[in-house]
Image 1: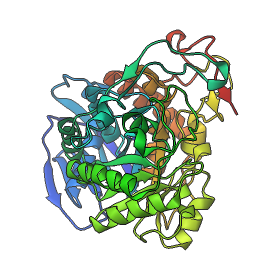
Image 2: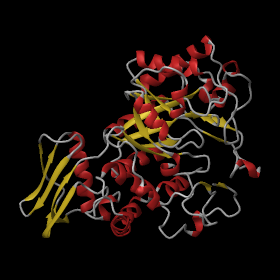
Image 3: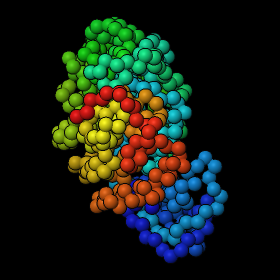
Image 4: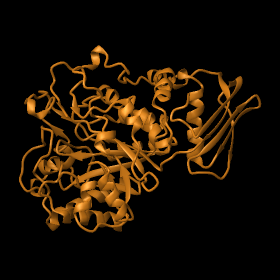
Length: 449
């Protein structure tokens, strides 16, 4: 019944009433771990730390039934007599959420923090800037969000189709908004890792301050790779040092993203100098695996291996910590079947079963893994729900639970116990047998691979 599957679950005979109260003690054990006992004598939790206690509460919530996930939870419920021993497999159990391509309003972002917490995920990586939008309020350089925070139109469907949405899109988070998100996430033992992408994916910034770029232009309305990149001169690097300093004042996370990906013609010195600046400020630079090609980086730089897992293995050999996020396994914006009803079908087919079968390479050496939700084609919370769930539920079990997972057993547990929880939470997930009629987008072309 529990998801992610715990290290061990022993079911006893019968059920006992539960009024929401239980005894908590601390004991030595794995980080974020807990032991849970439900018996006629009551409910007892022995946790390694505060996070372990929090995850024990999530398990108790699951054992209480789907109604426990509604805004007005039931009163007394019954719990199965059981013994649970549990702790996570990986320290980094992450989700990247691209709020740059399509802005996610703050209340929806807070909701996603709750959904991560339900699944015992502990890192929210926010992709805050890109060619199509700048979502971080800058008090030093306000045109970044005032000009870069909106675009006059958006590509609708794949760029090869030529279709446009025909409406403006925009939004940004104030610094107080983001401090609120950080604090809200911290209460749920989730670290928020911000990312400002350099030197590519920077057209929104260049639209605001044209002197930053190799050429000018407005906020991009297309998808794909924009060849316009940031200049590598000292004034541009200094501009971004100040922007990152603002970011550090808002986000206490030890890890800070600097992008570094898909910068055709970009100068590796830019990434190296920003990485060194973050290192000098006591933070850990976090970049996509292209950063391996820019020259020497601080050893504490973390590499996100998205172009398969070989770059991650190279990074490990160079002494870097690694988060595995290969596109062929954990890009959740990719299509979920080869059926023509899949809305805006892009990428390779990545089913719930495919995600569940993913096994990170060098599992005993990496920090963990991360699922990525790019939002070129996810323009609303409903579309985001459809792409994320229940595949994100499968991913949560990959990064929490021990090896030896069984797909058939998982699908049964998912259908009988976990999808009703998502229903109670109001998550508009993709049904296991295909999209509902209102979840399709007929006639909007994608680019399936």
